[in-house]
Amino acid sequence: MTTAFEALNAETLPVRLGRTTALLERIGADTSAWKIREVGDGNLNLVFIVEGTRGSVVVKQALPYVRLVGESWPLPLKRSYFEYNALVRQEERDPGMVPEILHFDREQAIIVMEFLSPHIILRKALIEGQQLPRIAQDLGLFVARTLFRGSDLSMEARKRKEDLALFSDNVELCDITENLVFSDPYFEAKLNRHTTPQLDGIVEELRADRDLKVEAQRLKHLFTAKAETLLHGDLHTGSVMVTPGETRVIDPEFAFYGPMAFDVGMLLANFWMSYFSQAGHETDGDRAGMRDYLLDVVIDIWDVFRDEFSRLWHTERTGILYQRALFEDRGDALGSAQALDEVLQSIWTDMLGFAGVEMHRRILGLAHNADFETIEDADLRARCETKALKLGRHLAVNRRKIHSIADINALAERLEKEIVA
Ligand code: SR1
Ligand code: MG
Image (cartoon, rainbow, N blue to C red; front, side, top):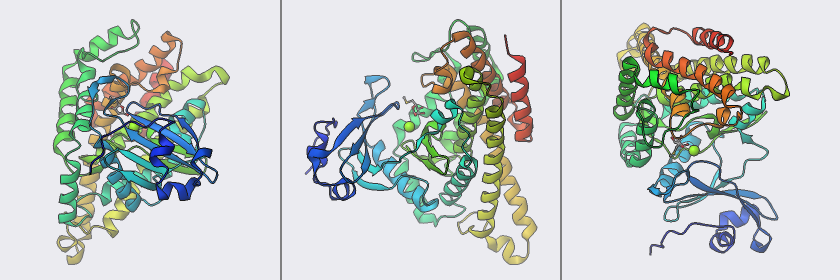
């Protein structure tokens, strides 16, 4: 029997989930003692923290529309099913890096999961100026392991094709990315906004920039057509929870089969944006050390990603691509190394492009980020955003000519020094 979807609230939650064994076992069966807070501050869903006598859990429920915009923008509940399936696969591919799932209700689009405490959202920590020692290592490994192990480099062909089919139905969430990331920033789309009038000039320039628009569409083409691996699909610093000793990745509802470079590019873009936003958060002291830290994180994430991807290439290449039978098994280790170099080079080039457009869409599109949004002084905010827009343009348009993160970081430092007034 199907039950009609009904959004949870703090009053109905104990009645509706009060017989869910996994939940009762985790937090205690006395539902009258449960303390419930709705804490969702994302763009799409309801999120409750439910605290019982023995512990706490998070209850996440999809809404049939985009929370940020309202009921005028319907969005299917099935995204919860994709999120659940992605979490299961990510746990297999990089154990301990996603929250433990306690219960899933497909009809009601509810996922009950471990309450991560004292973790906070990475974006918030970076805005506060916190230097987390583990994130580069943990996130570099996470992207390498999930991207490699979800692909034809590793998976059994039938299993991978089944997963490709399963996630191919996440059409509406892909549609959000296809519009919001690759197209809307580059014309006067209805829901766009930017810091005005300060950014009007550069926004006009970018929208008239033919090379940039063509490159954004090439990247969109990659996003729609290069079904290489199971992506997280929305891997920004708001999708990571941290303590100094632990890193967890959350919210993979945008998961689908796409280009390997997408998750890496989106992730690095968010660190570069954090870098440029630091000048807007210097009320409690200079952030020069934080800026150096953020540039180091970008270098380290890429290095860890490349090294772990290479290790998996040599030790877990059991899929249908670049079979060992063609290379190592007949003594051609050099051939395997050449192929790996080419695969990594292609990820590198595309990753830079995805990073560039991600930086643009967070400043010109609908979904902005708190790094810039919490800078109250609009002139100061616009200066920070201008630097990110310029770096984003360079990454997107010149991605084939860029050879190292060090070169990009050097440009970021130049922009940081030059755009002061
Ligand atoms: C309408 S949804 C806007 C954004 O929120 C999500 O976190 C994704 O980043 C999406 O692009
Ligand atoms: Mg999200």
